[in-house]
View 1 (spheres, rainbow, N blue to C red):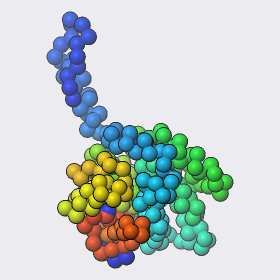
View 2 (cartoon, helix red, strand yellow):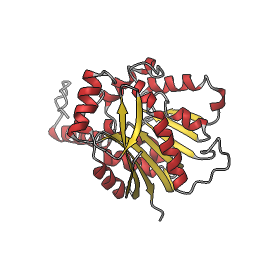
View 3 (cartoon, rainbow, N blue to C red):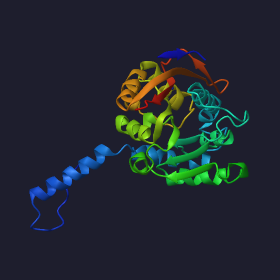
Length: 284
């Protein structure tokens, strides 16, 4: 791998005298199974849904996410080129490429990917954010036919979309989901053999706690308070291990660093706080 230079409770009785422990045990088991299989953190979805009206404000609470776009688009474009994707139209380098943007939010990354030729499907658990994404996309007629949004979660979406996409992008999402192994498996299942998965997230380190939470949320107010939970952060080594179990080979790991004074992101060799991962699904 090369690092390049360039973050159940018991049911309450309803008065039925015939209710028994076996019934309660079955219901408890069913609820536990649902919770275990779900990748969605409902609290996080609600938190981000409240920002739907601010999603496209480049000077608002999501300004750092807006300024991350140049790196994210470059990351996907160059990663696909490095896996042998042929470019026929220079100004549309992703033409003909089918991309799934998981946790797309209001569409900040989906739109620019579609503008350079990709056929993008953005999915998100939040109906409010999907509504915002659709409304904003409708302002650009050039996106018509290239961009589609669906309110869905991966555990429901993947089953009917196996081996459909050339690439899956989950940017600034992994640190918000439950059961990361299952989430990555669902993402990889939607990839064709040889397809790419692109991730950006935060490392689980002391610097990431200080920079990603204390400084970003409480001091500099770069993102709304409560956006991140350090306990859900994940190391590059752990992501690589999980991707391997999902049948993927990690190709690249990029460190990313944010300069709040300039509101700019740049590549760095350090993965101490933010980083990006590109992996490829193995062919049979």
